[in-house]
Image 1 (cartoon, rainbow, N blue to C red):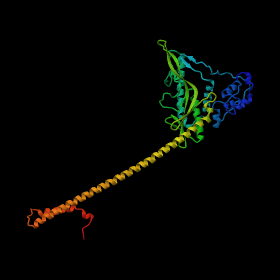
Image 2: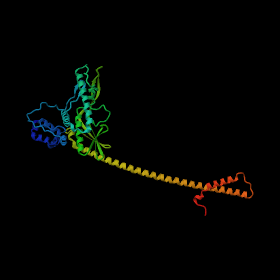
Image 3: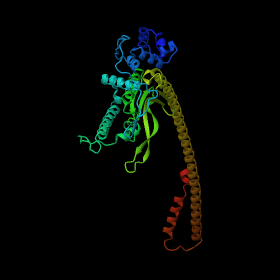
Image 4: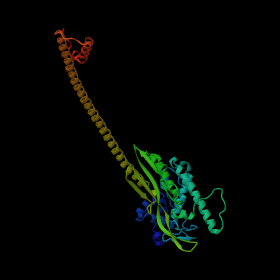
Length: 413
């Protein structure tokens, strides 16, 4: 609908009120168009539209200003080129893909909103945000150094108070991703042009999550952003989609062209909502709707995965309860086994003691019989050896010691 006859079918004032009352995707449904088509119509009719993230900030209670509807005769000073069919710009061996003007505006506006609400940054994001801003500053210095060296070939870049490490070309070949020198996983994998928007999105999610009863924490050295509630949690991470490509670098020695693998940041964000255990949901920018305008879908995914986490926690608790009960049963069975073994050992010892006692009694009776036989010999006139009396008294003591029957049954009265 780019011709004037189709544009005349829209009432500017009415369309202006509609796009500032409900999201453009819903305005488009009214006219049977997409939100992107409504945006283009508003651009051609010079109707100001809400910035990306407008409805999120409005829901969070931030004050938003609606610019007045200008007269139709007022023309914008510059017109952004359409990103469709845009050709890569080659500059001294580097291929820089122009970003869509709408994406650039989104980054600038969201970054401005973040600066205006700096005091509302969630504390769990402060560390990550400071690291990314520091890395972005280093990237800016690399860019300035590269541009200066390109403008002054053969000359050394002026010395700065801080030594600059790295190379702008390598940084661009890697997709201009921040914090790639660390081996740790990060909750945010974002490029130089998009990190402010990604952090602002996470910041808004943190504040809304707390309003919905979640507690927010950063886990494992800023690897995941965790939302916890009812003893279960989900974890978030945000990434920027990259496009793989190849550029050619000219060898200064033999002028040969060498291929270099590249990755180009697209400005399209993807948010991953990971369940406790296994499973995740991916939500990404749509052609007619950025993630900032998909908060209903984002929290539907969070709630869905949180329910899965609750089921996982319940399953884990059931497994733990079964394990404890099994351990209790095992311990009881072990106790019973040891008790039976103890009783068996006691029975064996008692039997052995009885057998030993009977054996000793038989030996005692045998000793007494032997002494009686000796006494009968003496009565018949036999002669005793020297010390017989002492030996007989000792033998009687041995017999008495061996005979423990008096301990069982006493002698007759």
